[in-house]
Image (cartoon, rainbow, N blue to C red; front, side, top):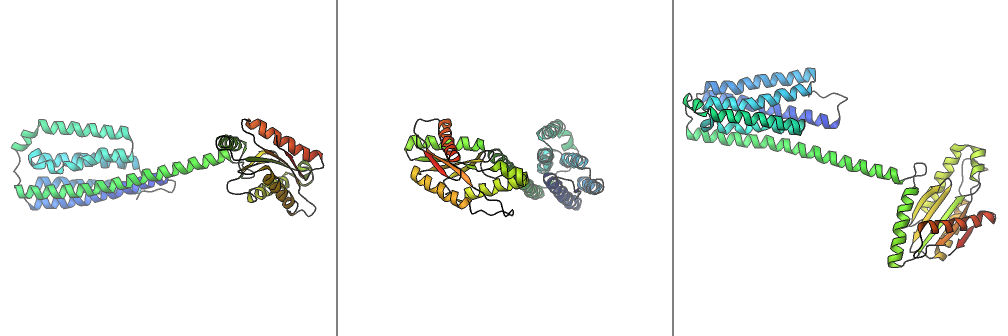
Length: 356
């Protein structure tokens, strides 16, 4: 259907829908042409038959040349002129207005397959032809053979039914395309938001996300009063790890430690990379005693982490504090940092606490 390998999914859908629509209208035009000739309207029958020949030629050319812009324009021009020419041959609005539903396809196709500006131009062309038809309506009526009322009703129902079915098909694919585009946009927004809030190396939250989450948890604490414990932890001798084993191993250590921290927490807890080899744990509804017990469990489990390097042993120092109502975020993190450095100064691989 004129689809190229490099086409986007959106463009492929447009090509397929326009090709199906153009083919359907061309086949219907063959039917209308034969019907008009059968009922004694040879000129009116020749117009849709000629339309079918030109339309199928346009479709075949599109399949060979893959010029979608030309295909769009040619099909829109054909579907705009067909109903007006047919209406004029039938004697103007009195006999031929039943076919005017097909003229709507030109601006509608421009809106679906091109853009709003193109749709506006085709709508203006439609209005110009409509005004011209109104001015010449008496002339057309004077040179045409009236159509029997019963036959006119049959044509009206057939045109209206087929026209609305094709319009419904186009609307279905248009809405589906818009929904797909909106879903992709939402996925992109979620992905971008995750990138903005996630540390790319370890996969846990970054400093930006930490600031937002800590602000929210402290606000909740001030409003409702549940305890909020904060743990700041730092990998011991991490510079030595990088210098001895290389930065690739150092990155592996950071990822492994981050995964270890995340797996040790509840779903309501939060872990973020604070910077370098430092990580912050936020523990809502957790007393200082419970936070110390958790830090001790994590510390002991950290010593049991194994790496490919047999002589690599990992330890970490922890600082625990309790956020106080009315404090700033900087004050809470500073106190946790001070507690963590107490652990460092006392020999590392231990947990220290500063409540206030």
